[in-house]
Image 1 (cartoon, one colour):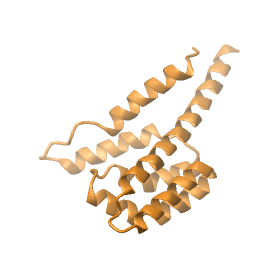
Image 2 (image 1 turned 90 degrees about the vertical axis):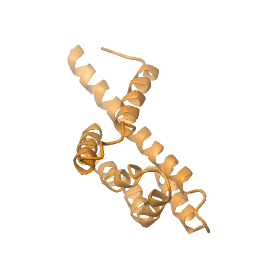
Image 3 (image 1 turned 180 degrees about the horizontal axis):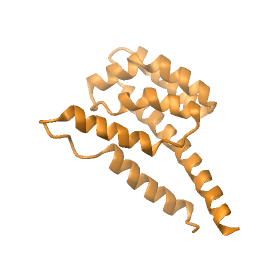
Image 4 (image 1 turned 30 degrees about the horizontal axis):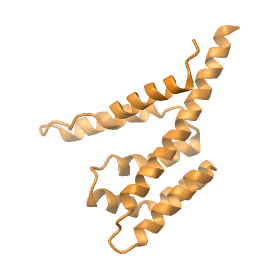
Length: 145
């Protein structure tokens, strides 16, 4: 079955939004709910290249911290590691986004950290979605023959 790239992106965006923006966990068991969410999120990225997986292992706990000063602090504490992991992924845009996050962390008051973190997160998803699309194409080719 072949689908258009636009349709694929629409479905992928819906799944990403659903996985990343789920409802808040109930107050009675936040650790279990968060753990289950992270486990499900990890499965959504299970097929990425090893270097992207390593990047995701650092990025995910930062990104899934509620937006605000705690997340900005966590992002800045992990900025160097994110840049190093991005370098391993060998994607110039991912590396540039990680470097921009590091620079934002160095600025007084850190006003741009959330924006730079969002760019970095989005670039990761572009790369992981491309890899998923290639895997789908190969699987479809095998089924056609």
